[in-house]
Image (cartoon, rainbow, N blue to C red; front, side, top):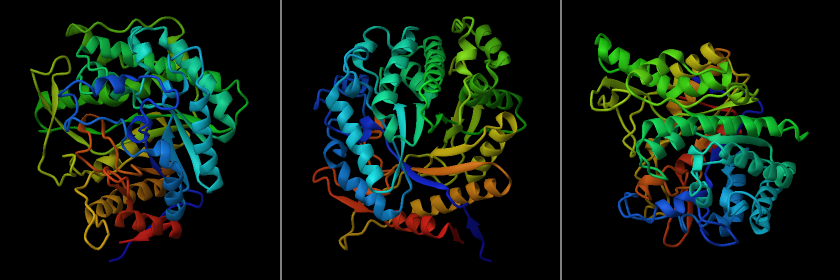
Length: 451
């Protein structure tokens, strides 16, 4: 039986990237050092020992990449700005070369009929600010607001959609608790404070934006997934999954949509010895600025077991044996559906954009010059079906941005996994459009697909 999956007229079909992952030119054009420029220099931090120093060389090849976007019919390109490329020291002097680079990229997108979605912060903090305490220093809220205002003034006429901060949970927890991302710290209390400051910075940026007179939508992108108990009738697993839902999702969404942090979660953390962030008068009002959309980044669901060794959450995800991508992330389209319904029920954002979703596959260019990636196509078929179904059920999903446009530097994994719909030969910088991209182009053209 064939089923048709339809998407509304004007649906925002796009793809995404981030500055450190694609730009290269790490120290060209007046750019300052970022925490990732520093982090990748320590042996063992990156799986393959590589850096993002060249990566996809987008800094020099953006016109070629944007031409491919146009060819595929992408309607939106989500990209981020490198803070140290705009303000090498994080505050003060503005690097005109950096501003002009982003203006040229944004103008090129506009000339090719592709809307821009600009992320203000996607993790490459200026090292100069890290030297002053980074995200653990409350002053960073003001530093970030200053930086955001520069972008509004210098780029605002060319930006169609704004995202303040990408995945504050990853910047906070992976960078300051787990330690696998820059700056590589290992302290949960410290990470929770960082998360509070990231959310405050988001709010400050939105508040400042509302005073500019710019009309484009502004929101934020949150990394989220459903958390299920590994053994549904094991009380400890049930409790562990509940805590992980608060850790992963509710902490951030409660703050933005309800202007509070989950009280029960904070009580549990405090009972386990966590130092909670100091929340001053006005903090939650600042964080809870009205946003035009919620960006959801999601790839999988987690099945959680109680784990006494993983202080302070006492919870860890376990593999279930489901099919998995090359990143070892298990497929769970039903978890994607459940997440969308959970967000709608508990927070009812004005609209949702899926700002990241995608699959890592073991791709290579065959002798016939093609990159055949049927696993990625099947992933898209299954996950887009859930997006279409959610729209049918009345959830206002305005767009879907595949992660990612080109293969790139995947943070701690380096170049060991490929998420792109465009293959990159890192030695020659040759671009090859993958078969999944051609399939997606047909979906965009036809407003849907049949299975």
